[in-house]
Image 1 (cartoon, helix red, strand yellow):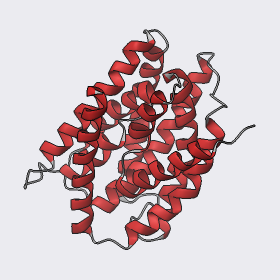
Image 2 (tube, one colour; image 1 turned 180 degrees about the horizontal axis):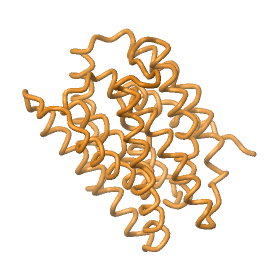
Image 3 (cartoon, one colour; image 1 turned 90 degrees about the vertical axis):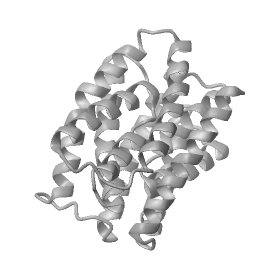
Length: 252
């Protein structure tokens, strides 16, 4: 087993952003790793495996530090459960598609996905009134986000975290709920890839997992020190920057 310091560092930074803002790990890492020469089917299973571990670690850390109450029976736990349950349909269908379309098509989807997520969150975060919470929206968010995760390794957080916030969920709760649901979704994705006869990309997986695991508790601690109002502003600013960065990457 080989460890690559540069990959560990990338995973550490991207996971810190993801666990602190509820988005950015796979969405950022996938195109970065593709630029380094790795193929999507090497990248995505390795990212899913690393996020299987860090999703639960981040959720536990958020709960332990008081950012959210994820005890069984609480509203936050129920939302996470529904999102996780929706993952099976979305992520399995995405894995099947990813294994049966040209690699260039998957790369194109990754680029377009990241761009659209950035633009969508940029526009919707500017709304001053929340459209209100509904379980139908949560189910829709779960299926779409899981599909994104299964086919590209990213695009889960922008949909789930941003969608929850636009539905009136507290930003800190939304981030922690996303971490827990994403952990389950990633686990389903790993099983789906293995069932389809694909191997985990062990060139990438150990380095990604190490960097991400080291980062998740630190990110949860950072969230506990930031006010809800400021967290909303940070999430909005980050998603805007993510959209601009993606656009520049596509033009290049």
